[in-house]
Each structure stands twice: as structure tokens, then as C-alpha cells.
Image (tube, rainbow, N blue to C red; front, top):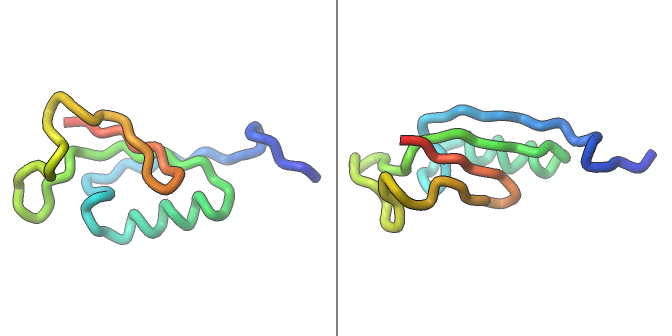
Length: 76
């Protein structure tokens, strides 16, 4: 059986923390992608543990990005 894009299951992950912050949810999402899932993460602007936005991030920029096949949507 040949799989098409229609066959892919889509996972929506909502997490306070995600890449470039280092948490286990990153590894879990990477594994789901390897297993054939389409993964979208809704998360905040990276600021852990300092409480300041990471370089290159602010309230107005970089709202959508990709990381290792994972779609990331950042919300304030």
C-alpha cells in the first residue's frame, strides 16, 4: 500500500516551551515526524530560563517556522 499525504495523521501539540528551548517535547515531536506524522506545535516565544526572549525573537517577528519537519506557530 502506497501512502499519500492524505494518509498522514496530523498531531497538534500545544506547549508552553519548544525549540530552541531544550525540553523533552522536542524529542517527542521529532519521533512522531520520523513515524510519519505531520506535527504542528503551538507555543510561546522562547524565553526560558532567563525570562528574556532568545536572540532573533520578539513580539513582532518569526511567528511561523519549521524545525526538523515540525511546523511551529508562536503566539505571545
